[in-house]
Length: 400
Image (cartoon, rainbow, N blue to C red):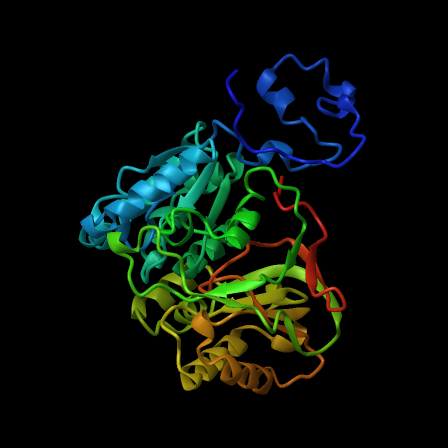
């Protein structure tokens, strides 16, 4: 007898089988439409999640490193990993053309993203990795009325972090909910041959898990110094998590809708520090949310693998504060710094720059560039309960 393989979705005890397809929809003859109502009385997001046999597309929207020869082993590992999940994977036509081509052709990156949304057979979009110039695709997309229309008509899971922050901000402007979470190279193609367990637990939200909370990982990992084929099968250096979520100030319980990204990426949107034209382009298309849009939001920020110095960190926070009225926020959550570099320094600077003890700040949360990482859904309301050291999602993670 052949063994059955795939994801098991657990909904607890005593589930009435009539909820699989609620009776009120049985008159629907269109199978595709009928499928959108499956399990909806106990899991409204069921039909929006990735299922066995679904297709996920990989895009290179910023740095085209995935197409380089030195990444071939990770390309293979990541592809095999997705297939083991029961997912079909396709690489968009320009995603594997290398760093030079990708850098010189932002219009091709934009074309890949548009085609991924247009294709009805693609269910999710996974960013290959971050980079530095993802903003260069904005003129090709924000001037394209067809693209803006299909994004809302054909919503799909979109996940990535780091420089992908700029694309999340674009989608936030367009009205599409996205996820600050794993990318192909950093997570799916982990050279230890499997995704880190904590990261996998949150990735599984995309594929059927009904997990609705974020807790601290018991372990944190250092970034690798060797990504070559020699690293295949070699575990990351790991450490026991001794601090967990740290409430630096403010109320022990608070809530709000999530909005944020990588601090360096947000800083570059505002300042044009790395590329002068970035500030101009982002202002033209109104990419960064207005001060009013930040009101009552929970700002989430984390720092890149560049490990910005304390002086740079303070400068970036002050620049962000000029655009975001920190006093109007519902709270701030801050990711663990990679390898815990400047861990204590960042804490002090945060409280200094915020300069309002009533604004809650939760520090050392597992998202962004530090390993492992959870997912943060843009625009979803979360509640922090310090007595339980957890964040609770107060609404569905997948928007209509």
